[in-house]
Length: 458
Image: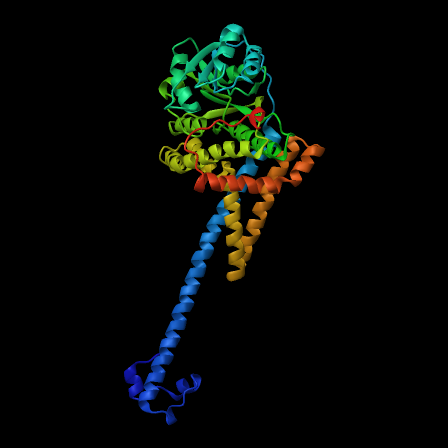
């Protein structure tokens, strides 16, 4: 029932209106009756407006929650898709071809006197024609005898002192042009604490002969059983390498550069000179190549392994650098990759842009956490079939992620110690998230900092 003040004053409001609203006009003064009706209509309009507002708000809220939960669910299925490819299609290859490519193994080293000799020795013993590879060490701002060890091993040593430009990225930017001035077809970047498989260069030669310009060799953890921290990182790295990057290459997509073991042909390094001095210099350079249509292939047939942090302090230094470097690169690069994928119909670039939302573990944890909070809020505040479906999708997403990690656990292998470490995994996840928050919000590293070695932990 609606009416105007003139209707009220002329007494045109029917008696049913008064009975419905518990008003008795016969005994009420006309002026009071007018005010009562005005108040009643205002209250009714207010309740109607509130109802419409809450209805529209509920619809908009549920749409936003649906988008977030659907995106998180897509990420889980996206990664599970590649895990299935790994289980059924990825097979280890053998290499016996006559090598043709000349490699330079470039080792940036800052005060690496304790481990440099062993990595050079392993490089010199590779299953590859000696005349087709050389080893070069960048002694970068060293205060120990790193440079002397390199010379004693009979390899090339590039000694650098620069207090203004310190860090691995700056050292590579300085050294790579000097390497390209020599006879070489490709450059492999190796850390000073890596163990390199004997057939690594054969595998890379095979890929370059097939036309690959950028290669990432699988990079795993050599000390998974030292602590629950190193096991957690070993598991994460195994999943990233073999359940994600290897099957991506199998279907023609690009992997990301994830540290030591990156191989770049001369043509790439000459066309896209190394200008990467960020916190994640290899990751950053790889994205620059992707933006220019150069994809990286992943080689999982041979592995590099290196020790990962055992102590909390070591983990904090390394994770802070990697997490903030990766998140900063996500912020700066993802839209460019998606734009290239759409505008130039470059599916590899588009997939790389999408992958940025699912390769960073802090981002994945954030997606799951936000989806869970919003899913339960919608279920309790807006109970409906829609909200129940959203909560069920979230539960299924969590289940897919558990299955995905479970595949990685069994593929990597289990023993009694690792079962014990799995029980401590929630502690590691909480510590990891703490480091991620600190890295992104509070303790952002300003420059590259080398991870302390296990021998330096005291």
